[in-house]
Length: 180
Image (cartoon, rainbow, N blue to C red; front, side, top):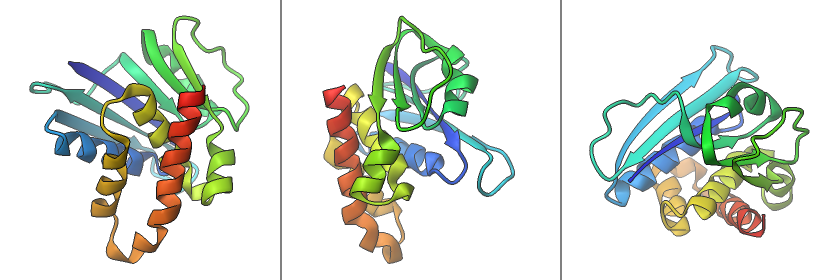
């Protein structure tokens, strides 16, 4: 088993945290994982992406030019990365924002109104947890509850007051993916 996941969006959307949570949750389930974050120098507003490679054996390289799954947080990420999806791959897109790029006909497309759900369930800052919940539900890579457990371990204690909102966002993303 080997899955390559590329998550991409705008800096400040929590793309890198989503990748970190996914990588740790997968590792905690006993699988092998490699994570490769990449971002532009702007603190907010630049581009951010993370590639997470998951396997049941050793991972040789954290880099993948073609991936089986894309989790794209905004329309710029769609434009920049949709060509990297293998035919028949899983494509999760934030449908709260306009997508002005054609999506591949061969992909399994899951449209998640991530920004709308984040604002409804928590705050705009929870878009990353909505998208992560959607990916986990659509892929079945780890049990959904492991994402919340991992997030609690990774977040500093001072941010634990945000856990109920984050858990609601994860669950909301999972439900949206299952309904899509």
